[in-house]
Image (cartoon, rainbow, N blue to C red):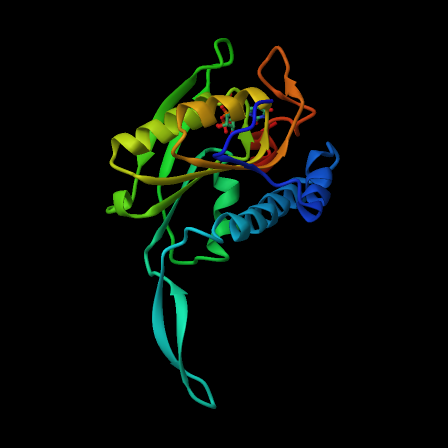
Length: 213
Ligand code: PRP
Ligand code: URA
């Protein structure tokens, strides 16, 4: 696959270890949900090491007063793409409990694989925040592209996209359609099958998170 300046593929051993368990068809719904959260926290730690808005505060330690950087209050919003993106929200809230959450509802038409948008509710002032758009699966890239486009139309200027598993097709599509958005993917898989599922993948992330199948 072509290399893109706006794409980071983690391939971190700790994340890979958790993805091995996530992929396993025998992993329970509870463990799957916990792993999605844990992987998201690890990804967020890395993803926010550069651009997170900070400010300086004075802190008095038992020994002296010093200046210390803190993350700006209200600087970050999380936007999960429903349903599966919901599974990643707590993984970011562990680090930023005050992050506001917007929701974008999309499902793929099973025949055409085109994303169908059915819901959008965003926090007030989202256009001034760093927005983390999350969805564990980046397959054809249609859902991610449409969600990012929608957020740009609502005025968002500072967007990052996080997925746990990405297919080469989807990563390229989003990277090219949104060169201003940094894309973080834990692992890049081989390809899509004829039904648009990622191989080897982990199956349907929404079904595994919520036990619908
Ligand atoms: C899955 C997944 C992504 C989308 C990825 O959602 O969570 O949103 O497919 O596919 P794409 O890159 O080809 O657009 P799905 O459509 O299955 O909806 P669900 O989460 O409600 O089950
Ligand atoms: N959505 C999923 O949940 N899994 C895939 O493999 C592709 C899209």
